[in-house]
Length: 413
Image (tube, rainbow, N blue to C red):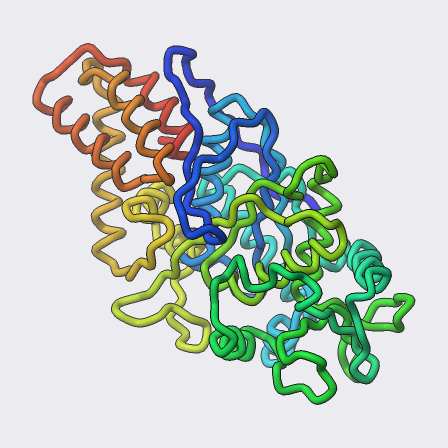
């Protein structure tokens, strides 16, 4: 599946040193430096295409865009794979509710998402893969789990034995009771009769009446959620069997820590013998005016609607960067209003013939980003530079700063 147009990244001058990137690793619960490498493998979980693209999506994909940009600025190559969960219960339910074909609903939302990512200046994935087009990869993955003797049948559905991985639970750090509660809330079926363990994960659902199905050696059906991502990641990111870890970075919103990322990692390890991701990076949730932002509350803020209302996409980027990526954010109109003023102010300062020194601010932005993607600190350095410029300080190169902000922060004015 095609993604969206490639993004041009201006090259940083060699006089700017780009140190190793440190990130908060959910698995270790510590901020850790990524190993210095010439090639990184990054997998980010994509949308289920029935409500794209709300601010929660935007915050997540902005975060991994910043990581992608920073790693590329070190001179490394980044293989970045993102999936689309274009067959899933919520998609089927929404299509039935609205009286449309699930395929048409998915396509409309994927197209909308592509446009939003283009407007937000997000680097497209190396491979952008829908589950439907990857169905054979999923079937192959299920067969590998069967060969590893880690699956069993409940009626005609196939389940994976999560305790076959001795490290199950080590990435999410939850108690059994917490896992059971969250599993039930996020698509799991802990109460199903016949399961060996209530946390065991569905990997193949036999076709139900009125629902789509795909042929397989196990009968017509469709995948469970978690097997889709590890099948796609392992195929397209081509792990090095000599490495302890299959990939470098697994990313997504904090709502994916459990069960999705825990289950995907567990199934991947059963297939390959490797630990799945060296670093797990998760973004905070977005709320609105004091309430959780959710589909059920019908209070989602959509990127496309903001842009249709005349909001500069760079203002959305700026607003989302003015807080820690891993912290929850309570959104309100004043956040966006402030960002719009800041972007206009930056644009006016970069258009000046004489500006304050720029090497120091570029170095400060790089240092801030290297420290667990501290975008708030990076923006504070830009505020100080604008203050200095407006106070009459000179000696800088506005064009070089503009190019650096495009490369590092994705701010393209």
